[in-house]
Length: 233
Image 1 (cartoon, helix red, strand yellow):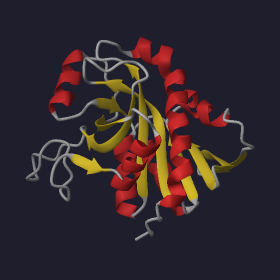
Image 2: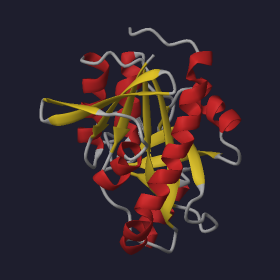
Image 3: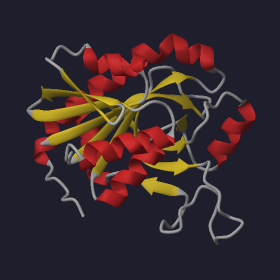
Image 4: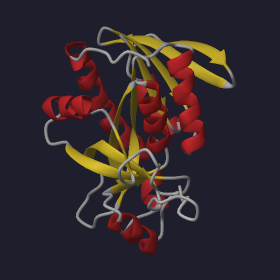
C-alpha cells in the first residue's frame, strides 16, 4: 500500500528520518519527498511546514503525484484541558478549522463548512478504531486546528468551549483534502504544552513528543493491511 506521511516541522520529521530505514529523496514543487519501505508499505513523507495551506498542499501532492491511498499525520499538540499532561497520546477523531468564518453570508456556525452538519471535519472512523486496538491507552479527541500557535488562556477556553480537547495547526487542512479526495486520513498527536504551558514547553518537549507519536504510527502501519483501501473518487 502507498502511504503518505504529513509532518509539519523538522523537529518532528527527525523522528521519521532517524527510524533506521533506508530513505531516498526527491525534490518536487518546492518540497522534498522522502521515500522508504516500512512495515510492508511504500511510505512517502513530506515536511509540509506550519499551517493549513502548506499542509493541504502537501497532502494533495502525495495524493495526486504519488497516488497515496492513506494519509497519516503525526506530531505534537497543545492541551485545551487542565488535566492533560505532556506526552499524553491522542488519535484525532474529528477536527474543527476554527479560523473559518462565513457566518456573515452563510447559515453556518463559526468554523463550519456548509456540507458538514456541524463545525467538525471527520477523520476515518475505521483507522481511528485501528489505532485504539494497536496503541494501548491512546484516547480519541477533537482537535482545534488553525493558523496560529495558541498561547493565550482565553483563546484556549474559547476553543475548548467549541468541544475541542487539543489544538494544532495542520490537521483540518489535511482532513479536508483527504475527505474531498476519497482518501483515508489519520492523525496521532502527543501533548507538548499543557493548558498552563506555552511556547517554552513546546520547544522543550517537541522532539520527545514527536518520537512517541511516530512510534504509535509504526504500530498502525503494521495493521493497515487488514483494512481495505478506499478508492479515489
